[in-house]
Length: 347
Image (cartoon, rainbow, N blue to C red; front, side, top):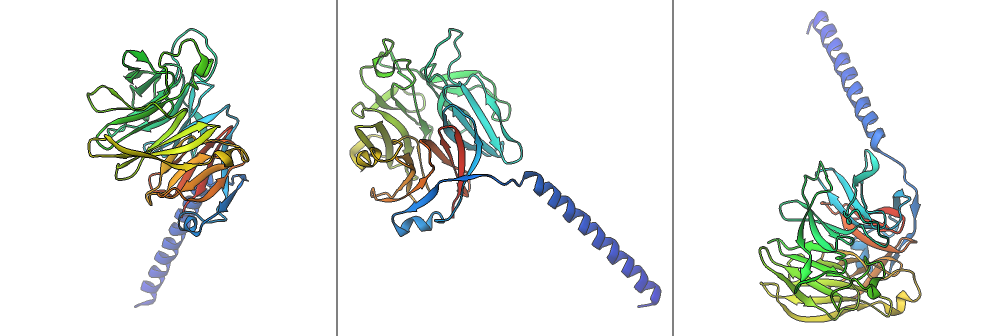
């Protein structure tokens, strides 16, 4: 190689180095804009080493946002690369993303009438239908409803999917999920009625667990759970889980389902009544991890229960915790806890 060739090669190398350095600086600058330091709270309580396969005992519980009245129903939405969740008394769904933090996503979310009312009137549980439409358990409207708009451009326009059973209005649908074929499962406690169980507008004599197949009628699954709340399906859809937020009987029920979602048997999976008297919180919303373990909000925060009903440990949030949700990769568990939106990193 000649001297001139060496000089030209050197200049090319320097230019390439400077270009790469500039690109790296830009990337680092962009990363710094979205990389935030969050305050933390609580701790991880390990009762069984099986929990350590799911989460690190020292994983910090990050406070992503605060200042809500009662946060509920977190849902990861990949279309916005973030989480949406309900503030039930405020009749609002909020959006949180790493890049933009917190903002209003949808208002009103659960009560669209013009007549003023009190109580828990907003949306509660949120889910996505198989065709990726937002579906809300609406306390105030007393219905399961689908948002008539795209996930990226939300609007307070709703289509009712279920609002009555045997001609009687639901009390206040609380949590909702879909099976892979579009069958709808939901719970209906009295919490959204102004006077709850004693409200004169309550039409059903019981608090029920229901389902509705595509194109079918609403069917009753169980009318014996005193305060049906959170609901979840196992990954193979052979088990349905329902939480009861009754302080006198704080339990999770397990229903075995056949291929047509008919209940073949049922049992009490776990009973935390005694623990609930010692630690703040009751069975509420829950999600099933790909491992088959149940991440269920309850006494102390989020209790992790294996498929046999064994308590593996608790994510102690320091708040009464209402619900939780994984992102699509199960990298994080997001939690709504009173006035907080929290997250903890999974293994």
